[in-house]
Length: 385
Image (cartoon, rainbow, N blue to C red; front, side, top):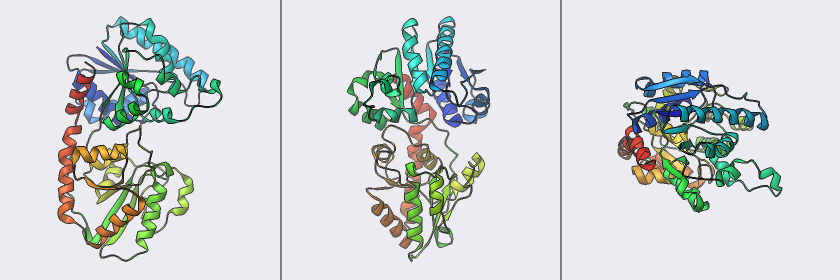
């Protein structure tokens, strides 16, 4: 038996990713029953996802999570009791593995404090955005560092706990900075349920559509995308540019940059899955203007959205994005600066490369095969052996 637990997310949060993670775990260990404990609302979203709903051998049990506005001490008290009960259940049921699909600072602290009491238990923690906090410089006041994620991540490690990172570039970047963590980390690509491939005729009506996928915020380079749209719209080209933000405005300060050069289908609320797919499919290119350190230790779900809808990329170079160009080949344009991105967009508008575009879509379709559940499951099984 394998017990999986989601101690952080409520409702629809991370539901698509968690459904894919569970599918990978189930595929990696096909002879074992898989039990998933999570917020009752979260279970509803995960259990109904086609990637897991059609798979047998997966059971669900509700789990009480701390209130969203709980203080750190309240959250730790709750999570310590929750992890203790989870470990006791795992020991009683003879579970071969406990999988945490996401963790907080408090979850990790509880795991580290309790693991020694269950010496036969083996755990896996899937790390998402929280991992980026290890790059933050520690406070000059030691007591402020006592219970940070970075502190507990770097101490009291043992073979009992393996951290799963979402990409081999993330593993390389982490180990380069913290070599002592090498024995305790492993990586797979971000589990994801890709949309079925469908035909797309680019550059229709002598228009090239460039899109930003996901929420609009400065940390994702949305300010640069809006700047790009305004600059390109102000110049003349053989083909007409169209810029679309497929996601809501999270950073309200960026609203002043919105204008006629940019279409935002839903500025105030997240799009439904069907609405997101509708707008994403209409794009010709997915544009990524993130900051240089944006995806050093975190994966980009928006990048996988582009893979899902077979949208060639125009992206600023960083280790995470570079790794997928290396794996998948010609999947778009990897640029070294904002000016390089702007020049690429201008060249496309002056002479849309239809033949190359179709080759890029084929490279994306072929490259996705390496990111399917079966391939990820084989990797996970080998790395946890």
